[in-house]
View (cartoon, each protein chain N blue to C red):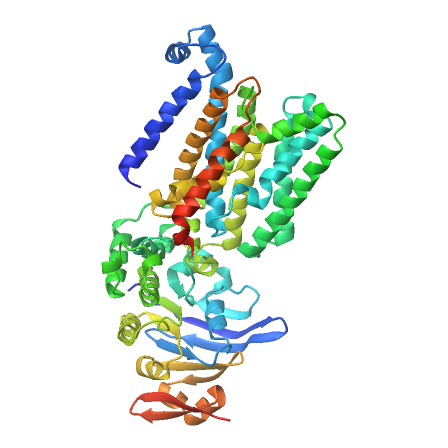
Length: 328
Length: 257
């Protein structure tokens, strides 16, 4: 990648981080608060930044990062530019796990039940996909299994909505699904981040394999990669990171699909280089979306999944319009 | 060229959907040997190459690589010894020619991120050899079929494996580059490497290869020097054609009833 793009990206991210930290219900000097934090001075501003704004910032960047990363990994793994983390059903199943915990009221019992429910859902999706597609399968049966698992999770979520005991419970589920980083704490960060890091490591380990896969599954094997081993590693990695992301933020679409397309030309379309670029771009995009959510919040809270789809949808259409010749 | 590693198989069988795609194939590839595998469509030539590379786990029988059982070797160990070129397959992304050729170095890279100088010189040399150096910065989706084939051959050579298994490497090439690629394979073998090449051009096979293996319905029906193998009787029974000959030219003439 060209140096100026790297520098521009990093400067952009730092600016977005400062902007993100400066938004909130109370007006405060972010720079001063950060100095207080750094020097260990106990001030109101420092407490607000530490307990409310920093967790939200970290979570937004981590979730955006792993969604971008997982999207890049899935597109390269399936050699399909339309793949996204949701395609293997992991995000919908994670959402289902969280919805179940909301539906039965377990989520109110303890803070950790909802995210753990989400992760259990993600794990279940992985088991279901491997059971359906089999370990020796090719990319196509993996996609088919993913679509089936996805549809199953979608219908079960619809079932939960259908039978929710009162409109309040229903709206709780719907709002949760639309995605948000509001009112997240250090605890959410502590639950989700280890899984995201673990998942990201699993994906980054496979980066040379993803390069080899550009030449097809058999050639990738002949270049020294155990297909089943690496494919499983990537799917588990995506499940870990996306499962954790959905569990703490809701079902945020479009990031995993759009971000890899956005940065692919910058890395000359190389799958290995796409991973880090998509992670950084995903983190930046999610920061921007979370800033927009807060800036345009007027009374009713604007949900994150709505913003990413509103921004991502037309953007993706434009991209397809411009790139359509490369794919035919 | 590094240590030579011959490849052999014994009693190789593979059945798929009740049909024997390979049955009791026994053969070997010696040091400094260029071997052509010929036979009609569906005879099992590609299946043989794939199973020699260990790409068909369901196949029975022994494959020995450098004196070791293939199944006992990891994919990474095999990749150092054998380079495999499948029939033309689409590349998933519009990579540059240079980046595509660099993929041939992956067996030597492990988890390393960057190419070292040895990798880079191997890539440069392979691009020179296959006559694609002038295309280095072109995107592969802008190449012609023949150019793409040569890029894939450069990718094959970049790995510097002693054994080459190539499935119809010259099928999409013009006569100039057909000769060029066959000469490259020949030179690879003269330097001590070995190569097994699936092809349909009988004259090319007879001219460049020391040995020809003829397959039909999953079996090896002939294996020997070109002159001994390419008899009128054999070509009639395997391909169902008569041929015309002139010096070392073997040209299909008529279909036999």
